[in-house]
Picture 1: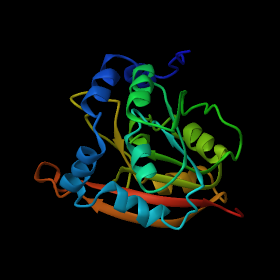
Picture 2: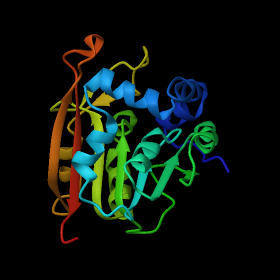
Picture 3: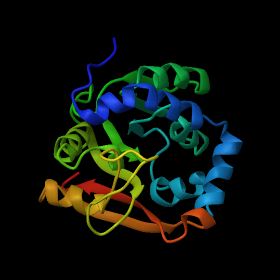
Length: 221
């Protein structure tokens, strides 16, 4: 069943724009690794290990906004066995089933994740919170924390304060921000920052831009 889009952004991503995004960004593993090398000077596999390398490979990991599962395939290559993804876009979910094997991917919204409390060891995003309106971030962040037993993990565009940016000439569909700090502010006393690293772009077309990877842990976990 296709989720009913409840926000301007969900409507945008479940329509033609989201479909074209999926087609542009569907890559095989070798091409995907090269994309990260070309843009940040590191493979995503190496970046994953820096943040999740200490975890048991039996850990359950959920990616919110997984699209066609490229990031989940990377985690699988890192050795993780119990991988889940959720995406609002029906076309992406169908494509994900073509690209991935032994990965659990379902349709659903980050605003109302279809999983039990504390079901996952890690709940994360890769370039997804940047596409959620700042007004909706508290709800999505709360849902991610609800479903996580221990860790919140992210890789997102970075600026110290929330900044609206154009996304392929569209306004109101992308923001940069300090998403680790926003998690801590939205859920005071519930999380602590474990690790944070900034990844400046090495791609000449993106020089001056930086992304941030972070790992947060639930207090008392």
